[in-house]
Every structure is written in structure tokens, then in C-alpha cells.
Length: 131
Ligand code: MN
Image 1 (cartoon, rainbow, N blue to C red):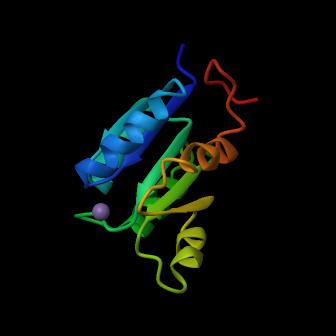
Image 2 (cartoon, rainbow, N blue to C red):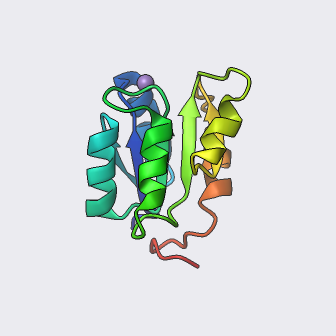
Image 3 (cartoon, protein in one colour):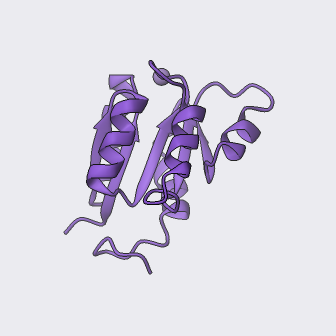
């Protein structure tokens, strides 16, 4: 049984495959969007329980994606976690002010990644419903 749907908006295949493998060990269903526009479309179609969002994306950057997700009443409550190596000073604050709930740094650390995800998805029960 799926623990919940995670939508990962990411243009890098290797990052997606790593996250997909890690999340599947915890029974999440993982969907992939390759750019921000596809990400917004898939978020509306699939109503994910959690969105992982790369910041450096083609077409529009992750900040713009977060703002657009947040401005949509149907998606305004879904937790968004920025996932980025672009950890310049102020980047975390920019992600949070664009509407993200949290921030995970790349390169993704397989030993700590799932604990970080659990922290943000603790509002999801095993059936994928909000607690
Ligand atoms: Mn990228």
C-alpha cells in the first residue's frame, strides 16, 4: 500500500533515480516532472502528499514554481521541500519566502534523506490521507 504520493520536480535524471529508490523503500509512490510547467500540471492531476522541488530548472526556476503552486488554492497546502545544491547565502530564505516549507541540500545523503522526508511528511498516514 502506498504511503503517499511524492512529486519530484527535477531535471537531473541521476538525482531523480536516487530519490526514487530511497522513497520506494518506504512505500512512497514517486512521480517525476522534468521542469516547472510539467510539475505544476502533474501536481494538479495527481494531488501529491509532498512535493520535492529542484531550484535550478529549465523554463522557470524553482522559486517561481513554488510561488505558482502556492497561488493555486487547490495546491496551497501541499508541503514543498526545496532540494538544491545552490546553497548560497540567502538561498534557503528565498526558498522559504517563495512558499517552500523546508530545504534539503544536494548532494542527497542517502543516510539522512529519509529522516528528513519523514519530518516533513509526518502529516500523512499510511493510506495517504491527511491526519
Ligand atoms: Mn536542476
